[in-house]
Length: 368
View 1 (cartoon, helix red, strand yellow):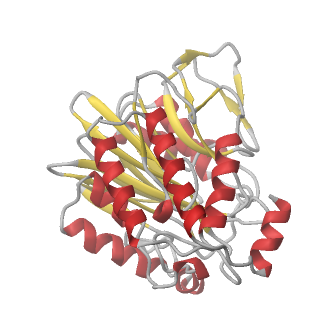
View 2 (spheres, rainbow, N blue to C red):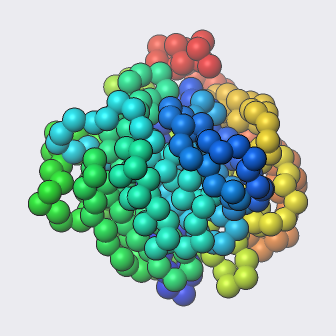
């Protein structure tokens, strides 16, 4: 379960929370522009024709799959995808929604080109395959495709497509475009609480947002006890019957000649710091480049699980928000922001006693 939004106005901002299994590691990875020698490309499940050269991209990718949940390329093309639940049989093999997203970022320069390519790839290779980390999970896909001028919402079910051009949009785990040929599974829609999350996002977008507003929106909860687990919250917490967890969060600000990327580099944006990287600048830790170094994600995840069992004072959020303002204004670089984040977490650990993990998290920690 996830939420994605985009706005083209006085600010051009994209945001997405990736909600997946709590123990699934999702890295932020940079892949430079490069030429391909191979004629074929192995995606998550199938092999397709490769192209001669691909764009440089920054993606948020679960380590076990080839595709990505969200990402941006050198041209300022940004894409996020969502699981949607339709009536009909899901394909068990093909390009996953995440594969399609990465392929579009690698091969396209703008939103219209990306929309066309995704439809073409689905027609040629099919869309499908298990997308669950620790359980079988099949679904159709929707995409929010954005550049500096356009936002396109694309909803896909087999070889049927719904397309909408707009300047402001949000997508969740429900259909947002009327199409008589694509029937929604209303039971899945109800239990995913996607409509409620979508309304929360839409209300915020209508008021206009900047980068800090985007952070706030991706941190929003529909309960005063978020750590107990809630599928109706944009910032999703797993627990008991709730199996999804916000495992990574991304905000992209598209400026005329600059792309600012902000990420939590890990789970639970509500207790995270959004760190900044300018697309095209030196690649720095914890961004992954051509390897599978997952130390930051794993260590950070364990710290957050421990923090969620402590009393978090109002002063933490005030200090965190001030830190992010300085990050946005380039007063604190990526390396320094990691140090400051650790200091904030250390204060919580030092000042507040820890409660015991419940059975759900004892089991998750054991298998992490």
